[in-house]
Length: 297
Image 1 (cartoon, one colour):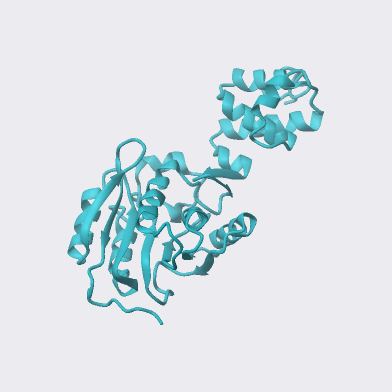
Image 2 (cartoon, helix red, strand yellow):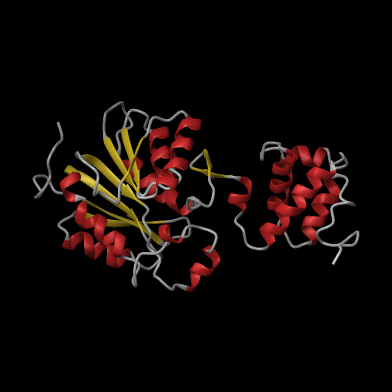
């Protein structure tokens, strides 16, 4: 059935910026999301929101209006804004993202902030390993703030590594990337190992809202702890004496992860809250002289 002028998907009457934004707001979109989608449709930086206000009556080409309407429709149908824009801000960095990788969340900055307290601010050569790097968010944030650290990032997905490598290149950050299922392909010893692994329970109802993101990067068995168990068990031979393992996990998993670390021989086990005050990250220190620790030459 043909669409008539003025229908939700008709762009013929959206001939200036003000009309386009009003259309998006009337369709139920948040103002900030609508502004970002319009700027993206126009090929302008997402920081140009003030420009939109001062140019409210500037005309839009039919092609721009059509692109904007299509993006608004996709957003209203549940596609993540970050995928539509092709980028996501994380720890002050602009990262390219697409459906090959999870969208970095602000809660994961808890992991980065904790890691930074363990890495020397003065020039030094601490070795850091980021497991399951995805878009490269954690590894690149750590390298950006602690440029003298050696950072290795791994992922089992070659597609995710393509995204991470492209982000490292565009940001000019020297992070080594390699394919590995957790630590199976990793050699050497590290002062710090960090990971934001899958931790959602299979069948969790929250997965419905994450249907556009890669399922293999989200779920980890019946209790959501399968990958966390594997990392905790595999890490000791790759941790320097006194080295730390820091893990992001689910909102109700701090106790279980703490117990796994304690049972695995880690010391000083503790947790850190995210921006909402939920215990989001748990870590432990590998003891000096702990079994399996070997310093690489």
